[in-house]
Image (cartoon, rainbow, N blue to C red; front, side, top):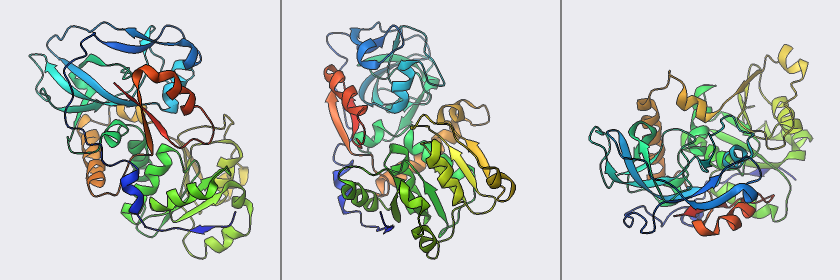
Amino acid sequence: MAVVGGSRVRALRLLFGYGFCARSVAAATPTGPRGLVYEKHGEPAQVLHLKDVALAKLGDSGVHVKMVAAPINPADINMIQGSYGIVADLPAVGGNEGVGQVMDTGNSVTTLKPGDWVIPADGGLGTWRTEAVFDEKTLLKIPPDIPLTCAATLGVNPCTAYRMLSDFETLEPGESVIQNAANSGVGQAVIQIAAAKGIKTINVIRDRPNLQDLVDRLKSLGADYVIAEETLRKPEMKELFKEIPKPSLALNGVGGKSATELMRHLRHSGTMVTYGGMSKQPVTVPVSALIFKNVNVRGFWMTQWKRDNAHSKEKLEIMIAELCTLIRKGQLVAPVCREVPLADYQAALKVSQEPYVSVKQILRM
């Protein structure tokens, strides 16, 4: 596929995340709390079951939250399979991300009050449930005026994109970033955050049915160039780099040959950051890249960043506030989402694991 020039047209944004503002929710579920529980690791469709779950006592630092919406992310699937970086104590409730509304608080809680909207400040809380009592320190207050789908998907992918664009290379307006998995949740957030900062993006995707629809969608989000993986090895890349500088930052969510090809296009002393491995293939680093180009090879995991003592909750709050500002300006929208009732979780799980699917499944409680 030839290199496609990008566009800043954002007319499609209303279709991709707006119009579902988080306002209010009903009282706690009349039938009692329910959640998607797994008692052993395995394929989610086989080990997840919708069950009644106990509601912990509020205590002094507890916060009673009515969950409203929670997405299904690849990390959620991996965690249930037992192949993720953190493993929950079993039995466990699935889900690492989502948005809810505070119903009640313990006597010692000072940062939250009933009616506030919250998202997890850490992974592993188990968000695929109708309600729960969480400790105050595990929650983060968010503004009530952002769209529901944006709120539900705010804490993982946009934060990952934000940190990778901020923490590894100093990027000035007009400079470029190259990434694979550009249609993923992280990839779409990278496109939008970079565009807001005036940073050019070269976005690599796999060939697929309805390829042009995906190209058009990514361009509508602000992608400057959208190319197929095979184009990375073609002369068109030389023409592309006559228009923009070679990237100092490559973002790898795939691994395998795709990662190696990204690395080939980095400028001298550039950095490749790996945050995922969808191909399940190792990252191979050519000796020439290390010796002659002095390429830096790094990894990033948002969960670890949140848990690192060097990163205070205040720094997390500042990042969330900046992302919410982009949302309000129409510069950051959620991926295309499909809302599914919690009871229909099996259908949502099936769709979320199909190839070439760019629609995020959102469980509605």
